[in-house]
Length: 180
Image (cartoon, rainbow, N blue to C red; front, top):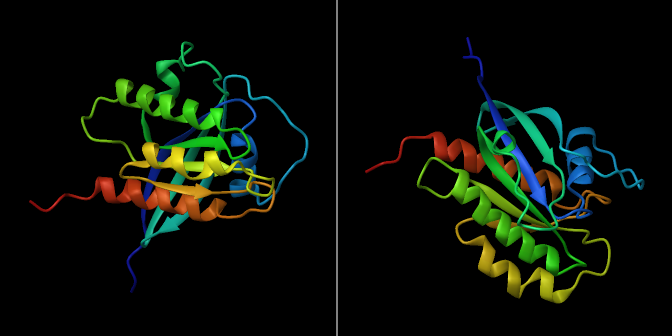
């Protein structure tokens, strides 16, 4: 008789400037679809998707947060509370959005209760367009640190599932006891 899969819920937050494709990335991941229509997220939109990673069942609770184009206006603490992982999203055609993503990582660190760096990934989205070389190489190196960046396209689906799976694996690894 096989043992049932372990089950957990994990909240993740997608953060970035307006128009970088956060909602489209979620729609691609959750529904496998892309919609050409641009819809601004006001506040937060929450989706769920069950995934299996390393023989563990995880119910992902995905918080798609409204775009922030100015770091002086912060997300409400309730949006970030309880998050176990983060996706920072930049637009590969707009280098300024990468700078904003760097600032959002600082925001995350200020609101965390733990001292350790939270699990996060950087998504440089819109790879189906003509990405700016500046936004996809040099600048992303300063942000990533212990994490990983993914060049994604919500439109084509390029590396979207891979990015979400990588973040889930990071969150599961963070839950495991560390060997001393």
